[in-house]
Image 1 (cartoon, rainbow, N blue to C red):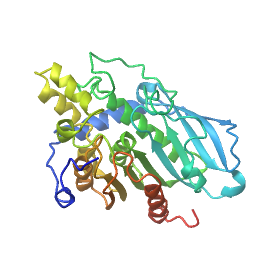
Image 2: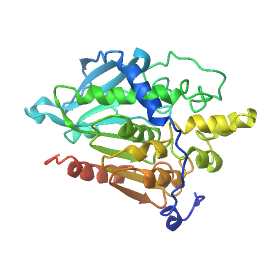
Image 3: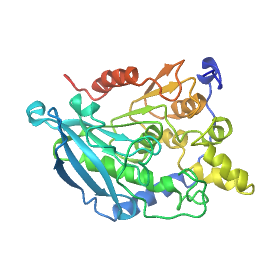
Image 4: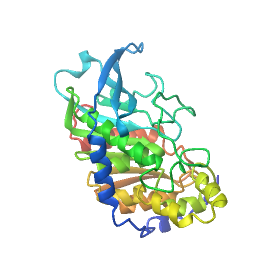
Length: 328
């Protein structure tokens, strides 16, 4: 796959001045205050996964509007974790992926962290399964998720998703076996974009690990991405020619390159220079706008798979240092 975006030296200088809505933070403060009217109502039920080094709990909690969100909580086996509260990681999912089967995502728990693997409402019928529906409807939309409710920030699908994600962070942070002062957020693609949003919206995030993040620099992404999911926006606007300004105004409330300006936790990004799903310039837009200390791993010859195992190795080392964790 050839390079189709800016060369690396230009990417390192690419810092678009994306407009932020005047009421951006009032909007999110009101959104999260509305969600807080519902108790988290978290429940954790042990499940047998067949694994001996990791113990798993089936988690449910009240997300946006009080509707149920599902997750897996993975903990190092009791014989391995001792008595001290655990450092922890919330893992958000890539586009149309769910929490999966209970044994699928256990890397962080295997490394000694508490790991919450969170569903994305309405998704989980693509590359891995999910168990969380989205009971909220929307006006006519392009198939997929990016244009559901896109004519209004109040109705937009990712308002509910980001709210669920903040609530998931609160569930893990208040778990009795977790050190609430050492909780990180992470995800690949859509999960990376959600993690960036949570780093700006939730209090107490200690570290952020966004891999090849999606949901960044919507104006450029919609114009240069080679295909889906960003092409959902293109097809919608191809049909609704009179809604361009309105759509991009809504998207600006959810753009990780806009929200991340308020983030303060250290972050380790990754970007792949042959990525046709999340063009590297959109990742660099979020990286340059990010408000906290930051580093980025660059993979020159990779597409949207990014660094995969190489990036996981870098993340394990980096997060251990960022959280001040020894022996994990």
